[in-house]
View 1 (cartoon, rainbow, N blue to C red):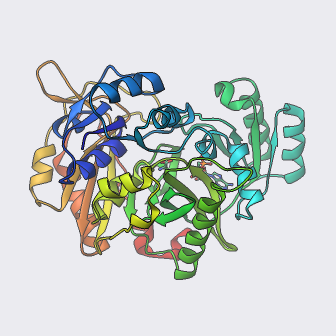
View 2 (cartoon, rainbow, N blue to C red):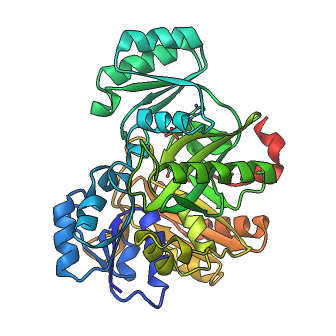
Length: 432
Ligand code: AMP
Ligand code: GLY
């Protein structure tokens, strides 16, 4: 079977790695791919992955049997719709399904209509009305640009002034058209937990839970990032909370097949939860695999990912079964100095092979922002550079391995958190 993966991050390296392990996978193309996917298949740098017709043309010319869409942008642009209309199997929801991520207002209305617990909110297209609602609710507040804003459109405002400033920033075009509509919501507190599910035919098949670390620096300080580290499973989640999150994912999946939200949802639904004192509440839905969650979830999946994705793409929910390893996975992100602000690229990376080999089979290094220079050396090419994953029979051993491997990899300006998984090891009280 020939497979095309769209995207270039650590998530796409992990997807490609898991798909390429399947005996059913013959050719695998990654567009545009990165320095890591290069050794698993063929990187296609020139394809515009947000152009459905261009992706379709490539898929037809190369006898592609399955297209796996990694990032949100092509989903929101309807690339899955174009491919499906031409009879190609696609893993990823259609344009309307992707609105669960593409529009925070749509997502909130979807939650409200289906009784899904979430933060109290209102959505505005008028600056003064948004400001008035901030004053009515009072700080702390969360202000969100409605559309896709590369993870930057969510402002946690501890004070009313900060909230009003965030509303003004959205309406003055700081997030482009994503900020033409603004969601203002109450601030929730508690640990966060990501629960992803394969969804097809209105049915949800939940994966193992994972916990991301969004802030740039140790102790959950500094600016929000795309994610600086992650682990799976999540020991601080109670059985009751897990059951409630699974229930919510099942309700959400069923709602994708019901009026008025009916759509062709065949892909991953990502539930971003806050474990509040009143129970789990949804912070956001994403229409794709999480990055970096995928990098710790897929190494723990024992089932053949090609089988699972084909069944999802073809709506054969009866053929889906997920088998998970009992072990733990911890991933530490190595980032460029300055990330999530501006950073330099092109720094030579040393020690990746050494890191993978010192504990063979227990360390995986997934590339995110990497490339090759003209001398064939591996270089940094993005903010998040590498995901160093440690596996182990205990949380402690997985975490220890990840950090031992981190020591062996070097590039100028290497930046990482030293406390991935630390709070979870301390227990639930660490969040109080
Ligand atoms: P979102 O893109 O909506 O998930 O927001 C990104 C991050 O902002 C989340 O992972 C949370 O850390 C934080 N966040 C979003 N909404 C809220 C909320 N209502 N209360 C507290 N934190 C939030
Ligand atoms: N890890 C956060 C995300 O993928 O949105």
